[in-house]
Image 1 (spheres, helix red, strand yellow):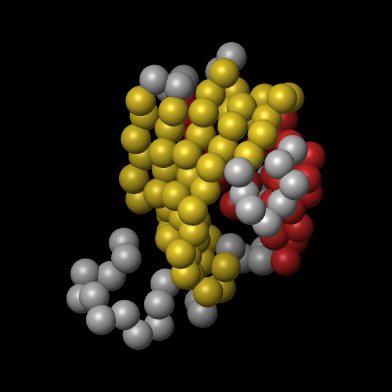
Image 2 (cartoon, helix red, strand yellow):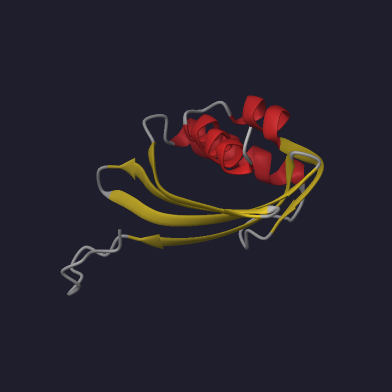
Length: 121
């Protein structure tokens, strides 16, 4: 399986509420991340993602773009927590031993009144 397929499968599982299963299948035991809102360890982000899945059970994620370069995979997704809260999110994953060992992410809420006729997607 390609790393980009593993990354997108992880995100799809996590978005659909299968967070513990996604972590078991795709996340390295020594995983670290760079999400500014959580402590940088594996367990803390797992709990945060699991809570988000419970808080937004109808969350929808659409994979828009995926790039793979060596041990790095970038995934651009559209995340709709609900019809009023839509985000553009970019995840960058680093792989080791066929598992995600490190993750960076950047998110931007879709502006309600953007002057850009091209939108953010």
